[in-house]
Length: 185
Image 1 (tube, rainbow, N blue to C red):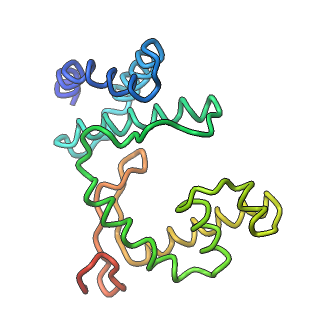
Image 2: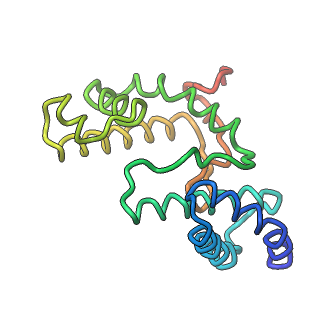
């Protein structure tokens, strides 16, 4: 696998640096983040199963490193959309996104309301607590439980395959389950 990664990395290095710099607006920081990506790519290269998705895998690691940087520095507003760049799974993600509302209908209203506000309308959890007249820790718990319920609903109806970073790489309806992906099973 190393024989395939090194030439790919060499050809992508400048593009990755430009990509990261467009998100962080700092050339030195971009180079540091790309260096962190380099380390992860080479230390985790044994985890990639599908060699044809190497470029997508590297971009996913890069996006995750950018997000990690902003989280470490406590930025509330992250940055421009990190979904720029090639992503072979955009159609799959869009398809899964269409399932959110039907699957949310199956969870209790108080959790559904918390998810809609926090994750769909991007209301902060502090603001959510005020709107729902509950404590901040109660709002955080409600959102977390709602996410767990939504995930359970997804897993009940679909076989979801993810990469080592949690990115969805495949989704198939489970036999006999209610199919939210469009066609009936």
